[in-house]
Length: 507
Image (cartoon, rainbow, N blue to C red; front, side, top):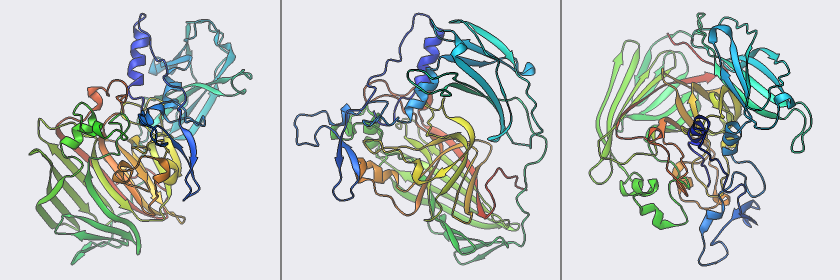
């Protein structure tokens, strides 16, 4: 149902490792929504039980397929395709550039597929080749040695090997050249050449009332000194950030978190949404305990300690640390801590609002479709491009969507390339960018009700809870939940004045 199918890879690892274990039966294949036109907007949307005045009904429980009612694939179908592919591609000895190809079919030789490979550095292809025709019989494998020649890498760059298999001829169910199987491997090579350095600082950070001018970079920051946070960031007079970063742990509940059209599910402690509501995560109160702003050399440092209270008697201690540099960079660190005994949370991160007009999105991480902690096997590492509007998937019941896991950096830019880039510290993060907020989606029950804001809501997470399958099945595994403890999120805000986004080295 909805944004679902977490932990499929975990199940499949058992299927492959235990000869007596079977599973993976899809229920259902297609969602059973009916098309209706919104008379106000003219947009089509899908309706379900209760939308016809029918009682009793099962609400949107008929919308539980891998395909939308019009056969549009849902994002989780990519995960199932990858897991169920008829070729297993396994890394062999790294020093010999080997891969093992195994035909998982029980009846068909592998010669109906043609293989190829390519090497990418930070998502850019640098070498490619074809595999020999493999006539592997059912349930047999073969080691292949690839003639890889990896050019020198810059420090911090990542090299990946992709191996693909496509159909050699037309099949009853697909055209010639259809991709059937793929795998990606991170190559064990490290870069020695330095990545591009961000231009050196000129001048110093100047403080005037609430305004910080970051050297000669043209970047200005407006502070809310009482609340201990950023109020706005601009470059050369163009707004970039209009609010945030603010602590955020809420996500628009999935069908797996609790069935939205059955209000009683919101109060059932056994359901994630019910636990979150009972814990008061949807109505926390903010208390500023400490704010400190001081000069550090040519830079300024802002630190704030804020307590977010929820019930009964619980809460979150959040420390925000910002370093504003004369080079125009803003180094951000957030430390989240919550006490033992509190319910696991939907996510731990921050939310910021990016100015309207910065629609062009680039990122280096998993993609191109959405990915989550327990559903990211099919989302491979690469450099991806798109728009903010294009990240939204219209699940029949509006809910959390569009997340990207294991991201090194992302950028949002306007037509002339002006915008901002967020680059991770030592640990990668998850993020999403949409024209609505999690609270916006929480209140909605049909896709036609989603209204786009002109600005962009960006969520950056140290961690987000997995998806699981709990609308009619088990919750996500404990390893994909966020239990009480201390978590840290670090990144750099890089205002872009026409520069292309990429990985930067900061002095």
